[in-house]
Length: 93
Image (cartoon, rainbow, N blue to C red):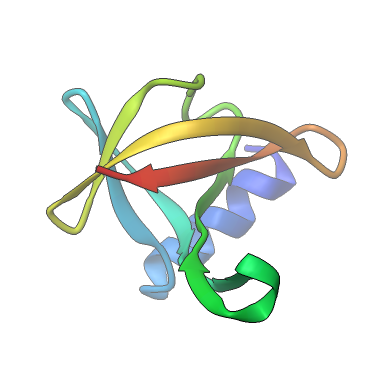
């Protein structure tokens, strides 16, 4: 197992990751929903993201995932660091 997968597996065992369902498969990812300032600072918007090892999941723009009973559509997927980790930006449906 590679280093990033070991790191994520340890985080999963510690309860730090969130179950993400894609089709019939469920994997554990780092789910974040930070607020982002929009409209020149007059409003806040949620910027949903998941981080995961690249070998655990293959996502593309337009895919749908389910997290904690809510559906999200993938907007964008980017490699993080050396490419063994991915970050998917999501929109809540």
